[in-house]
Length: 298
Image 1 (cartoon, helix red, strand yellow):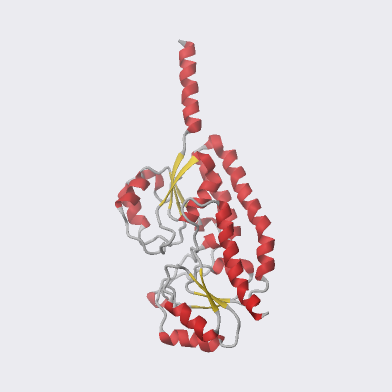
Image 2: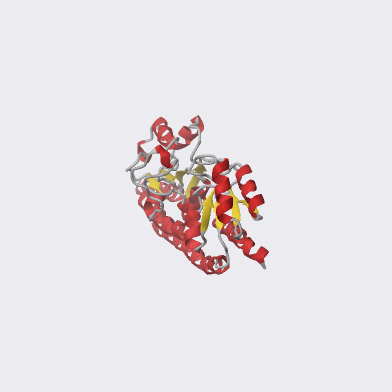
């Protein structure tokens, strides 16, 4: 009898050790970070397609089904998903992932945020009172988020806590190795016009000037008057225009044509299933685009 009980305990322990945490990430960037930290101990489902603006999604039954089974929800936070994530969580009826519970993790809450507006009104556009949610465009902030996420995973799965911490450390070390090269290249970048305030964290990290935005206020389409004002302000200067593929191209192309600049269409997200190496490649592409204006001047 004792041997039978011992065998049962060993089987249960083995099953527990081999079990994976079910994690739902709101975006592909959060999915990449979760898989980098969690490794083989997590199973990750991503809700938002990487080629869509995560501000504006419809709540779908598949979202609620994934959330219903989740042990952990990894969101960007800072109201990025405010239009669709709260009703999806409510529809999932999963007490583990409610705000304030161990199974609810917000990346933006782990780091200092820029563009905090406090009390806002609609005249200011689609701004975020708690600060810009686009923290995933700063690799250093992503490293800090990785360490915080490792702690949370370790609380949910204490048996693998050290592995999570080690994986987060490896991600942070990789960022530290890449950063000097990015900074060295970006030192020659003359500046950039962005479509939206979605890459300001990267520009701040690299020390690259944001010369303007295609949007007159966040979330509002560009007007002819605003674009003409940008042209008048920037004529004779060097720079590049960068926008995401889901953002309308007409405004950026008008600016580039009037200023003689180059337009770059770049994502702010990795693809679903991508690795940390793919994330670093994405930052490489941004840095190369930023310095292309300097190359054109020489």
